[in-house]
Length: 327
Image 1 (cartoon, one colour):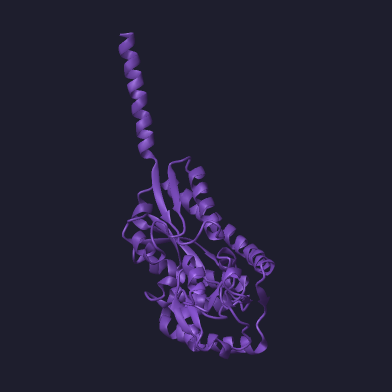
Image 2 (image 1 turned 60 degrees about the horizontal axis):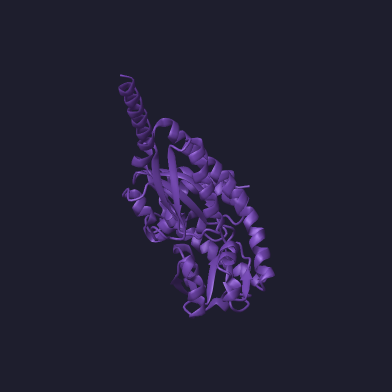
């Protein structure tokens, strides 16, 4: 009897352990950017925070640098439930709805304070739009202000004429066309090769991207034009989120809020650190001349008017709220 009782006790314990193991949920999370990018570092911290808050009941494995799913497919993969969550740059969805391009309109919000006000003005509208596709917005973090990388010095918009310019969203493509450059789609991992082969001759992107891709190996100039601060956003499949128990859902939301706060602070820090890195490695970092800034501002005004028209009532709602919040 003693042996039988012991066997029963061991069997019960094994069953409980197995049940506990099965209760843990594991999620794969694709991201488009490399491990050194502060966005990826922030997301890894988010995943660790979720694991700690849930005591290991939800484990998120981050797959960086497009290694699991390419950038262009992340949103639809989350929507279809192929993966439960993912990160992407918000403006990639501008072809679906112009509201996703609101943070990529030149000089609409060209500082962190303005970018934060714009995010507060647009967050609810964007979350509502994502919800129509059963996607939940968790958080968003901006890149440092976008500047202009070139092989030669640029002092006026006309200097961009006929240059092959890397475009990563509809706004950068439109800006290229309005400045008479030739837009060319290139993902971040392919930037060095694209420059070395002559596929592109200029690009608009952040100091962080330039530092991460070692821009000094393939170009010479960075003009800190501070055109806009585009955001990466983290989304989750609503069905996957709903399958979590209430405590785990709350833990995810709290970790997301912490990641957003941390990410905005890191983005500011990254700007100064990346600019210093560019200078240290021989990139000529400059501020835009009056002529260049005036020309870009005129393009920005044109693009703001175009965006407002395309975005319709949703866009007007965002702009009205932004006018009230703008510092």
